[in-house]
Image (cartoon, rainbow, N blue to C red):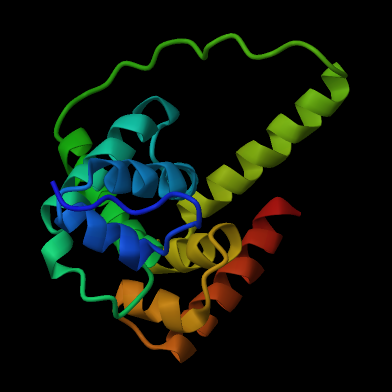
Length: 183
């Protein structure tokens, strides 16, 4: 095994990738720890069923680590990872459309706190989730990458194979449509 990275200073993603390529398993674990939560938020926001988000995130990391040699550093690792996550979700959607699923009752939610606040929050969450699903795929992905992940337009363009200007337009249209839906 190669020399592991010292953990006294937070390593960059590029340094962690290099360390993982040289056999440092802790570097891979740190990449997962660093990016799992944003990836899960992206997948959930893009329409992944809550019960499948963890499996889809895991599949995304498996694909990323299998193809890490193709990562050239032209964008941030997280951008590249979210692109892979989007593809994993598309594949999941294709598989799901070929099988019939019988939905089960929703799990019992946390009942602590003000019930009125819970109801309002749940209603707003449902409106936003429904609105996101009504957006065209590219608008939805641009919106999630910008609003949820905080990516810049040039990073979004690189991840989605478009231009920064087109990413801005898609984001603008997504925001406008979501505002109309939520009203």
